[in-house]
Length: 463
Ligand code: GLA
Image 1 (cartoon, rainbow, N blue to C red):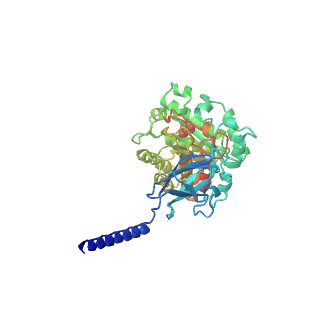
Image 2: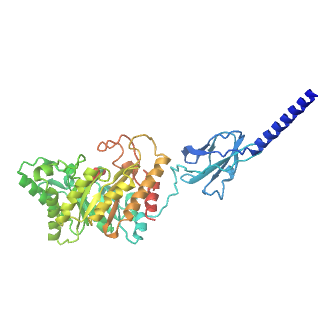
Image 3: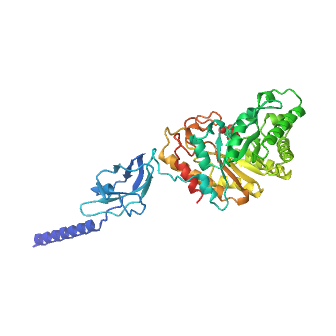
């Protein structure tokens, strides 16, 4: 009797246990997988990745060109995969794709994972927006010049440079051929040939010519470095040079960088140049005044005079000193605008830093020239080819810069100039001046003159 009861009890316990186990199984919902960033992104595919889900037997992968998966690529419509990754192939270069996964057992399919977006590298035939920059800019309510740094040798009729320049750009700056060491061969002796070619190209093609730069410590001709006269005679030479160049190009050059980079990088002092040493701290103002006087004497009352410098958005001591100089020039009524070079990187300066810097110029009522824009993606030399991730980061940074510029009040806009056309001819790669240790891809066109995503980013910044 006792044993019979025990047997019954054991059966009941077993029964209950079995029931509860079944209940548990039925209640256990298959966990949703987490999709991870892709690996090995290339021209026509990538490796999609996700996390392990317990009890799952396989995973169902979807790949789509739309974020809401309204259409799914036929080969990747719930494609069953037993691994935790899948090499997706057969895609188009330079295209945005999205993927998501579900986990699967014999009995269940989980919810969809998060969606991961990925752009195939597309080093060839990238379907970028082919709109010409100046065409889009000129349709804005308040347009501005889109500038390009050039060399005279690139201006031959019918070459890719020439065609792209005339299609896309509305302003030019000479990369180095309109500086003092290029034009001035001796006291009062000038070689105008190359600079004249640049100015004539702009004038003939209805492209704005920005003169860069009258006074720069890195472009002092040897004869002036060696000048043995008094300081007053030295100043007279500088005055003569500025007067002669401004007069020569009066009515042909719309604006000049009168002084380039007069402020030091450390502590916001004046840079210790030959001009400071020979002419004293008022030399910047003197140069502006001479340029202004020469223009007026030559009948050009609308010449715009700029002060140009770099790294003011991140170096606040330098920014403060530049703005003290600008204030001084403003009080003397000799300045029209300020050039922010913007040799930037994909990480720096931040949007806020750039805005703060530019807004100080707005507050002073100065025209703003983003005068030498390029955006490095390999300042640490951590990549050996132009990766998809850096391409997108660079695109975003170009877009951000253009957006900031375009948002400026109409009265403060002048030009946004890109410092060179093709990546492989930029001054950035292996630059000793910048201590840049390797290759880089800082511009809007690749070495084959194909527009890059940075160019599309520029266009998107205008929206
Ligand atoms: C500075 C100057 C430019 C040019 C670059 C290097 O930014 O302002 O004229 O020399 O360096 O290309």
